[in-house]
Structures are given as structure tokens and as C-alpha cells.
Length: 346
Image (cartoon, rainbow, N blue to C red; front, side):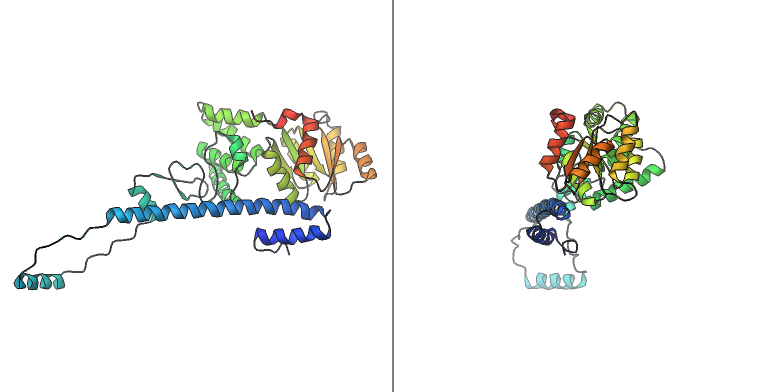
């Protein structure tokens, strides 16, 4: 019923009922955390839309007051002059009705410039850093603000990223790389954003601010999170990105090995039970690699048994985290293996 619910609030109600029946259900705990994030985002989006509508209405009302014509007193006409005026009015075409002005035109007439969001193409007022439609922040100078941004419409931002990625098929483009990076940073996917920031910096080497953003992101610890649950991957990614980590995700063991060929993580969060290749096998591959054998591997499992822990140790795992886990528990484990200063703001 939670999966079929039409609103986050309805889904939250069903998931809370599940946990009343079975408080240890890992799937329900993780799904509830994600639904609460979605509910918070929806509230922020609705508040932003209401504020924008109120601002547009106020601007239209102010514009109507400014352009209204006050009645003028005229001297009384003689009967003959009045008759002539009626004849002319009847022969002349009726005056055109004034066309209603859109909120955008009202803003322009008030001297306030507009800009279009590069991701969802909606109009916004100059001076706003956050798009009032998709919720994406435009300024890239503060990676922490981007990571903590709430109210992002993930579908719209991903659609915008795909649009700019299509443009890159035709050849390198500074604007396209910059906007793909902007989309990924607003979606807490900084590891993917870095690749496009690097190319943008190569194409515009004089942009010192962009270079500083790139170096700030590069300095963060990289975590590879491997889990076959979309909910768990999303929960880990959002939570860790907001604490100053970079996160790369994989949905199974084979995809994890492909990611390891592209990235050298500082730590691996590895689910045990996965299709194609389980966590134990992936851990063995990591520990047999000379370049990665010192990388801490934290096994994730819904079973808190001595046998699973022993098997994980034999495979080379550094530590073991039982599901369900809360974010504080996860961050504590990362602090222990990466150092407590790894998530501090610079």
C-alpha cells in the first residue's frame, strides 16, 4: 500500500503502520526515511510556488494601479455637438480591449530583469539563486549549499541534465559541461559532477572560482556504496553528500567492479546479499588487488549473526554494519575508519 500511495504523507502512514507491527523491518525503515525526505521537499516546493504566485499577483496589482486612467471632467456639450459625437462613435470601430499582461511582462515593466533556468527553462526573477520551478541552485561557488539544498525536483533536474548531455554528443561545450555539473551537484551526485567540472575548467582555465569549487570537491573522501536496494543507495548517497563526502553507487557486484575500474574510493560500503555476485566475492576481489587492498570495506547485512561476521572477516572485510542502520551510526563508522575530520567543512 505504501508503494501504491499517491502522496508521501499516505506512504508514510502505511510505513509507520508496518513498523508498529514489525519494528525491525529494514525495508520499511529505509523507505520511511526516503519518504520523509520527499515529504519535506514537497512542502518546500509548494511554499516556493505559493510565494511566487503571491509575488506575481502583487506585481500585477501594482501594475494595474499604475496604468489605470483617472476620469476627466469635460464641459457639457451642446445638443448638436452631442449628436455629432454619437454619430462618429457609431461609425468608428470599437476600441481594442487591453491585452492581459503575463507576470513576466509585469516584472519587466517594473524594471526587474528575468533569467531562464538552464535546467528546466522556467523564468525567474533577477537576484534569485534558486529556480522556483525545479528548485535547483544556480551558483556553484558554495558546494556545501548545493549538497544541503532541499526541494529539488529530481525528475526535472535529470531531464535538464539529459538535455545538456545530448548536446555534448555533438562536441565539447563549456556551457553543457557546466550545466551537467550543476544538475548533478543539486542531486547530491558530486562524484559525477567532478568529471564535467574538470572538462569545463580545461576549456576555461582562467575561471578561478570554478577551479576552487573543483579542488574543494576533489579534497572530499570518496565512498563507493554497493546495494541492490534503490532506497538504501539513495539514503546513503544523500546523507553522506550532505556531510561532506563524495559518493559513487552501484546496484550489484558486477557494477561495483566496473565502478572500481573508474574510481579509487577511500572506503567501500558493501551489501552482502546481491544478485550476480555477492558481497563476499566482491570483497575478495578488492583485497586481492594490490592498489585497493588497504581500502576499508564495511559489510552491510540484514542479519546480525556471528557466522556472517566471521565469513566477512575471512573475505577481508574491515567492519560489519547490521541493517537497519540510522545515519548517525553510519557516519560514526565512517569517522572511525576515515578519520573524524573527513566530513568537516573547510
